Amino acid sequence: MILTTVLLIALLVILVLFSGIKIVRQGYHYTIEHFGRFTEVARPGFNFYLPFFYRVGRKVNMMEQVLDIPGQEIITKDNAMVAVDGAVFFQVLDAAKAAYEVSDLYTAILQLSTTNLRTVMGSMDLDETLSKRDEINARLLSVVDQATESWGVKITRVEVRDIRPPADIVNAMGRQMKAEREKRAVILEAEGLRASAILKAEGEKQSAILSAEGTREAAFRSAEARERAAQAEATATKVVSDAIEGGSAQAINYFIAQKYVEAVGMFARSPNAKTILFPVEATQLIGTLGGIGELAKEALGSKPPRPPEPAPPPPARGNALK
Image (tube, rainbow, N blue to C red; front, side, top):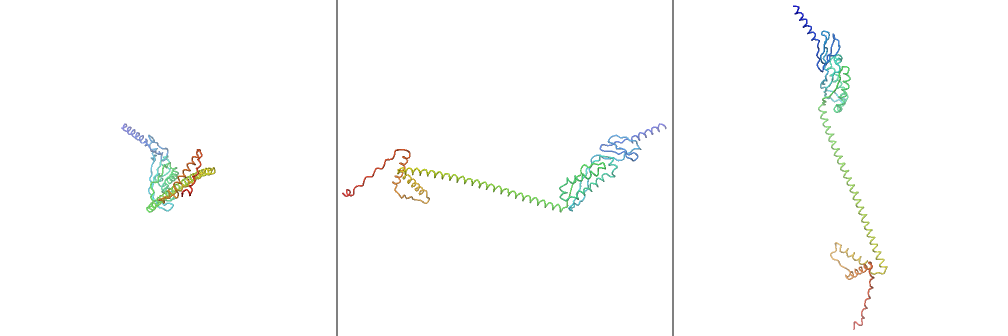
């Protein structure tokens, strides 16, 4: 009987001791209470506390968690109704504050995020809410994180997942986008035509400049050629004049023959001339050419030409009658 009692007492003591062992899983912190008052936080692993004197108050998840913001309708600054939902990512940094500073941590974070989402998006136009999601997320993160700091919670991210404007606004935005794209296409086409016209005008300008320079160069060369021809003509005329002044009759023949040949060449080049009539005898032209030859010999330094012999006197008329 005594042995049985001792065994029962020993078994009871062992059970009491085992009830004081607290095994905390990784990623969790337990708050320990002494007669209902918080004393310390049990870390992951093996922990022992006297039974009946200490007990576990709250089991706090220390890992990063996500909390969905349910869809809700929000009126923007320009009185447009949009449906919005999102998500809040947070992590508990202080288990004691998260357990005892707020009654229901998850509900508090959800309500705080919802009200601030309405405040932030209600202060913006519809176009801003659709195009400035990063700004909305940053403003929500700043406000909610500052408010939950006293709860031992760190808000890591706030994301707006979906913004759904009404159907009529979506259709109007589609028409606006189409009109804007058509406008840009027309502007680009006009700019292309303008650039093409400018390049074409520039090309015509350069062509006109080059043509004018070519014409000027040709006129300059033609004038230079005429000047040289005139100088040559003047030199030839001076030589002929000097020869005439020196008493050479062949120089006159040369000058007259040159003009005569030029006149005959003009007759020959005439498109309307089918037949050329020489108004002089061919023997006169041959004689003139002979004079040119004599003049050339004189110019080359040959012996002076023999003076022409006087023609014999004509026979007397009386002798012919005899």
